[in-house]
Length: 317
Image (cartoon, rainbow, N blue to C red):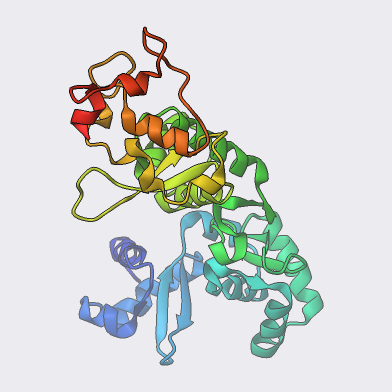
């Protein structure tokens, strides 16, 4: 008869090893065969330990959480076999047809029985059906507590197998609002921090995913990619809003925009020592782009022309 303390110790050891332990692993931990068998029996009867085989044919013991053991209680070995096949599929899941084929070949379970078994396992919240974005007509089974892989679900851009256009549009607008309201070029990390702070999405998005959103805005020609002017040893890709009415044919190189490369752009404010009203370079660029500044000096001449050798932005650039 195994001591309760030993049984509990074995269960804890297996729980701490989610990939399972073989007989050899347990022997190295001080478990001789007799003691191991005595402690395994009550755990197997309670459904707290599962036994499978490694690719090398060795017995592998894994712990079964108490909640799962409770849900499996009363189900015969056939149900447990189907559950185990689905568990082995992990976050990729297993197609209903593949499951039926494997169940028949490996355990001689009829395909009609597989359908009924899956329905009962689903009712007990042990497994769930998910829709594959690659094969929408296929029914894929996986463990209830698992999240489907990106290959199956399509990642955060999909919901219930469909592209979540509402979410994407909210994120695009949030990113665009932030970039438009900045007086400097911003990085993807800057935009990501802002999006997170706004709580626009119920999902936690990565920097890479926000980069995808920015790429879509760039392709729609509402924002532009510019080189960083922060003096980083590794140049970062930055973003600015594209002027709404500026002819696209004139914008061949964003580095031509004087504000982007200006080392004192952070100090440039309306009415300041460094200001856009008196910047010769900005006025010239706007003129070449099909626009002219309507700001004039007190004598009626264009303000940019009044910026002499001692004027604001000329000294700064």
